[in-house]
Length: 597
Image (cartoon, rainbow, N blue to C red; front, side):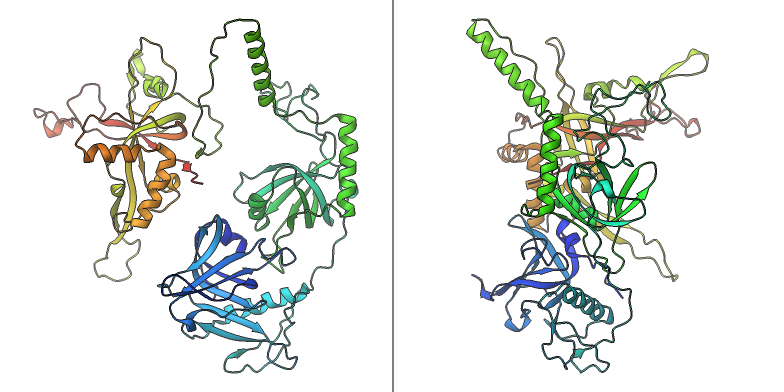
């Protein structure tokens, strides 16, 4: 049976977590003694892209242990499986780390060089154990893949009788390997065919969690492709369902224009690779592209059925390749005729303003300071919602909460379940100590098969509050901005900090990491507040942190007003406030994340 957390190398490198990984050793360093009592071996494993340098697309592994016999003695071309190893960012690179106090089980499958011997020899550790049949099959499959690519790994010879520590397999029949597909220019592509394509990325869309859309061109024209127009050259007919263009449409296609660009849908695992490694203007080679015809000619790259982890897209950097040279020649010819696309208009506008300002200075004119856009915190991001940004002060006015009832009665709703986007900055937080930002919770089990009392499950949950204020401009006669409490709890906290809640008081390393992430949200606010509390200063001046974009959701909780003591239970009075419906309006953060560098 497959391990629940078994992942490919590319997926393991994309997100720090605990994984079971399998790969071929492509690079290794001798075992060395650390400054402490342990020794360490460092090696790199891959499960694809063996034709690229060892450092490209591989996972570096550092295995520490006080006992030499517990360290995997790996060699180049060994197939290594690591059970439940922690992948973290070390020196800005994803690294699998097994500490000296951990016990990460490993399996080494070494191909035999003797033709008449068993296909490979297995060693395990740190405590010897018998690999599962699934693990043996995965190791054999990877050895077959590497051998098929012409690696120095020897092709296993099938045998039927395994030795006590040697595993052999009878090769099961499987579909024949794909024959090399023909290379094709976009102008020659036809529906329902398979090709290799080489093109330059014009645009890419990575918002979809299941696929990535690439728009590529090789500067050849195909009549089956959509006709991309220059901005301002669209026809008068609106989009489908909007004949007279009442809705309008934005054309920001950067070029090339005409029928020269094809849309390619990359599905996993190719989509994940593209999100991490491919950028606009890169030259990419697609090695297994399926053409289809819907409204226009499109392409897609699906998961390989024979080699599920194989990546069929790569950045192509060989400038001496004849195909690359021909493509770049066509590109130069195209832009010589049509003119290079315009540069960044923002930079051009900024330069123009600077020149005007300088000219005014030369003429002795007095220049007034122009209104500038507030610089936002680059480390805090929100999802790409299309809803406009509302100033916090406008949200508090609750103008949309007024409701007209029958008979002309107008009343104010206590709250609405709505969401906003706003620009805010943190001026304070509660509780006063970051280590109290999580609370222990209990959950009853979903199912209880026997009649015995169900044991509750304990866990941890984020639960803290940010005191924020808006950043909109205010006139001189306006009062000070009203601070607002924004609550952070549950999934909203996990998304904001990109960490699961845990016992911060019992885990100093995790506490330090959380403080570091919050520093990118509110600067040295936590340090200033801690110093003020330690010195007994209750009237400390709040630190003005850098404003950031934030997604806010509005909700309601039962009000905390004191109940009228004269009201009888049968009156069902909720509180003594006449303008209260028994609910209190609150705000919480969601879909906002701190991207710590």
